[in-house]
Length: 357
Image (cartoon, rainbow, N blue to C red; front, side):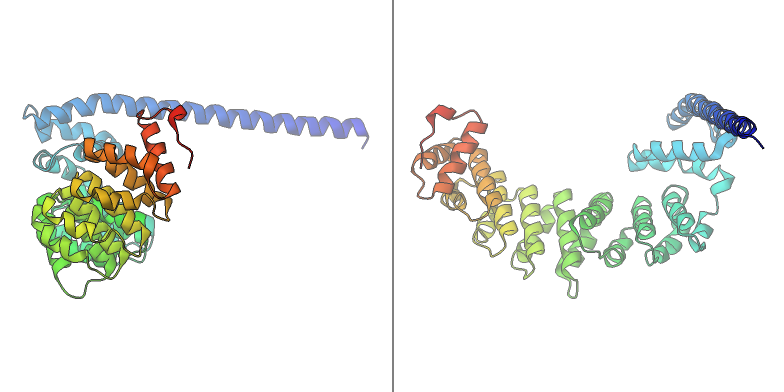
């Protein structure tokens, strides 16, 4: 076989492959465009009907045939709407959720060998389920896959199960700031009904520091005045992360009776705790603790100095006066430098007015 024939065959094969690839790309583009158009048209028709249903202007019997034309997309739309509604309005959507036959038995998905199936089932039961789904979701809190446990926790809270708070804390006792924040956000979405369970955790024996930290976070998110006494007690906890979250939550609640308890941790061994103390005193406008904040300006940790300076700004005129004075006369060079930086950032000190240490 001569070279010309080999080149011709190679060229023909490459041309054929190019044509096949181009055909595939065009086909995918057409499919994608059709899918996008379908979703847009479906949403354009379904969402006004669902809103009319919420206003009492349409019935399930009218809307269900439309939703059944694309149950997956209908479920997604209903879930999106549910997340944007308050609890009372959200409950009105339940008949529409259960009108989708494809998803009526999501509890069975929690028994699947495939974790993705269990995850989707746990997520959907928060919208499709009722009290009969609670036992299956409580079991899912012990799933080997953390994502499934988080999904089950969200669904239990979504269904208003305040009895799930303590089991959720136990099942999601995972190290790390991000995980603890996620758990606190999930539980706090229960609203005032979360208060009694988290008080039980903060006041009860045998709970580890992760559970106490999350409970303290929830109290702060909900700004529960009922939790002030329990949070004040946690200021003495041996674990720094618990003390830190108690400080933050007390500052969020804004009860001035605990200012001195917070200030007592101004020389805590943990710099993160000291930093939180400075921020809290600023948030509470604790002008009586200006001397402590001035001491914080010379802390060995930059964040403590930074937060002490901003706390003085937050206090108002008294704090700003103290900060101006510190910019010139603080006994520590770090304290003078931080004071000048913050005053400059707030436009209260011109760079040319700096005094060299």
